[in-house]
Structure formats: C-alpha cells, structure tokens
Image 1: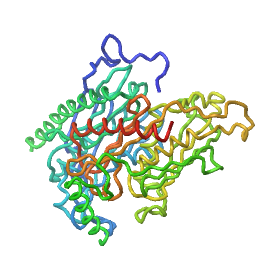
Image 2: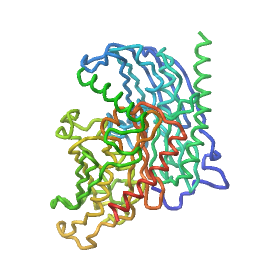
Image 3: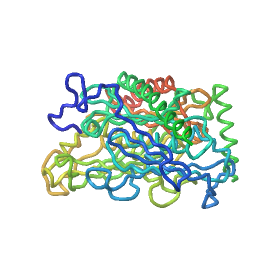
Length: 238
Length: 258
C-alpha cells in the first residue's frame, strides 16, 4: 500500500539512482560452505542470501521415495533478524508457498532420473531481506546445485519486475515494493528462453504485463551470465 | 505404487486425446465445464457460496469479526483467506495442518482479491489503530476434480458480494452492506502437448507439465498470476494465456457476478 506523498521516481530516475531497466548490484560467491555438497552466496542490492545443497542422499522416510527419480526438496527460510520487524522463526504460509514455487522453478533443469530413490535438499537462508529474496534464493540455489555437481540441463535465473508510480521497472527494492502497485517475480531457463516460475500480485494492464515480462527476461539473461562467470571462475581456480 | 501406474496410464490417455484434438469429457480446449453457483446457503456466515465446476465442488464462507489492525496499516481492515483441503474431497487429501497445496490455493485466491482492491479496506476501519473489521474468507473444498483455484475464487467473490457487515451483533451502527468494488475472476489453464486447455479437470492437471492462473478485473487489468507445476512455459504461450484469461473471465463475470 502506498504511503501518502512517497515519490518513487524523480526526473526519470528511481530513489536509488537506477534507471527503469537497471538491476541492483549483484555479487556471487560459489562454494562458501564447507559441509554442504554445494553452496552459493548471493547478494542483490541489500539482499544477502545463502544456499546450500545436500545430496543426492538416501531418502527418508522410505515410503516417500520415488522409484524412478530423485525427489527435490527446497526450503526457503528467513532469519529472524533479516527484516525490520523481527520475523518469528520457522515456516509461515509465505515461506511454504515460496519454497514450492522455487522448487518447481528448478525442477525442469535437474536430471532427477539419474538418482532414483534419493533426495536432493536445497536450503536457502535469507540473511538480509530487501525485496526480491525469492528470486535471489532461486539464483543462489541454481548455482549451489551446479557446485554440488548435480547433473543439470542448464542454470535457472530469476528476477522480479514491478510497477511503481505508474511505471514498469526492474528489480524493486523494499521501499519500491512497499509503495508500489505491482510485483512480478519470474524464473527462466535462459538458453531455452522458457519460463519456470511466474507470479504476479498487485494490478497491471495486459500491456504492462507484456512489457514487464520482456524486461524481466532480459534481466535474467544478464544474471545468467553472472552465474556462469562465477562458476567458471570458481572452477578455474582449482 | 498401483496408483502411480494408474497415473501414468491416465497421463498417456489424456495426452493422446489432446494430440487428437479431444478432451476426456468432450469439451473444446477453451471450454469450461458447466459452472453452477449458489449464494447464501449458510445462514450462520455473513456471506457464502457453493460453486460447482463440473464435478469439482467448493464451499466458501465469509465471516466478519472485530479485531485489531496490523501495526503498519492502523487505519485499514484485514482480509484473511484460508483454504482447507479436507479428506472427504479426495483420496489424496489428508487431515492435518495446511500443506503447500492448500497454502498455495488460499494465497492465490487472496492475491487476486487483494490486488483488485475489490474491498476498500479503509472503509473497514472503526477506530484507527484499535478496532477494524477482519474479513475471513474460508474455502472448504468438498470434491476435487481439478481447477480448485477458479472455483474458490468465484466462490470467494460471490460470497463477498453476498456478505453483509454484522454491525448489530457487535452493537454498532453503520452501513450493513459490504462494499465490493470489483469482481476479480480467476481463469486457470494448463499446457498439454503444446495446446492450451482451459479449466483442467483432475486428470488433465496431472497430465500437464505446467499451468497458469490469470486473475483479471472488471476493466481487464490483471490482479494476480501464478504458474504451477514443475514444467516451463514459453513467452508466447503465457501471452496467449493472458488473452484467453481476460476473455473467459469476462464471460464468467457476466453470467455469474452481475
């Protein structure tokens, strides 16, 4: 809900100085955790997110095993200190939904049939939140899966677009998200040009939606390059 | 295991039908099953509706209670949407706390209603920071033959249109009619074998790699979207689905929510 008198766009620029189609600064580090099979630290502006992957490992309980393929699990969790008002620890309805759509965003690229009866666990912890955490989480998880050596068809890249002061803009920060008119996170397999996650809330016309989708898909291409570069750098060091 | 094999058989069956231009129940790809809507069945609630889409059946009740506003919106009422996938509705539903499917169902319905601003929350404030109306939208699924989101959204909006504010019960004066300014309608589609199918039944939902709900308003704007399942969608397909969503929503609105 918009507060009275909050102006989000001034002279064609956003409050943090970005243009409408500009991402916040992104930082990616691969293999940051010792115990996990794969991990990734991902910063998107003021968002700080860490993802860890364990597995494939034997699935318990056994009756939940899939005889034909691995089961992917995804847990999105916010640290209590990650937001302005302390978040009560543990899963809430929002994180349950985000975990579900994030898992579904990644499943199309994972060659689950290579590891029947196992589970692959993806744990995403939000250490600091500033709007766009689910997209940062998917980006981090995608890189962490690759770092864990899970056979994948490709990486998944994710970003949100939204509408502020009547304009369609890329990658809302928290102030923009809180005072904006719409928010739409997507995830994409860049090299195949297909969408694996799409949500929208707020209000947009069909034309704005179409514009936003294009904007987001272009940004995913940029993020994909950064993810790829981070992985290559990590593994050329070794 | 037996169920899994049956699922695979059914998936192939649905897929082959679609490749031959057909659906299990003989519908066209863009046709809904027969929709039935009854309002005001539950006298104990402020508003209610029963929706049937084919064999899918959902009951929605709206209750209003007085409560405290959220600290960050002290002058606004509250909407709380909840969905229960009760075990009577499907062999797959189990008793217990909400799982990710019921959470998703409730949150998608909620998103459409919230995004449309159908309910003017500032009108539900009685005393700033102290007392506001809390609108509970409770979705009770009775029979799951697919496409719960469209049935639940239609039921929720119809219940809101049917609802009154129980001023008397709380010793308050004021307008008893709940003001509903928009009529968001959800249209869910799946993609099977490159074809878009509107209003998937249970078998079609399971056969589809991906699906999309598009919730649109009186003026054709979009107030909520959600992609489903572990598959992907091409940009062109999404844009086509949005177009179909707007058109179908208009038809449903004219027939059931005028």
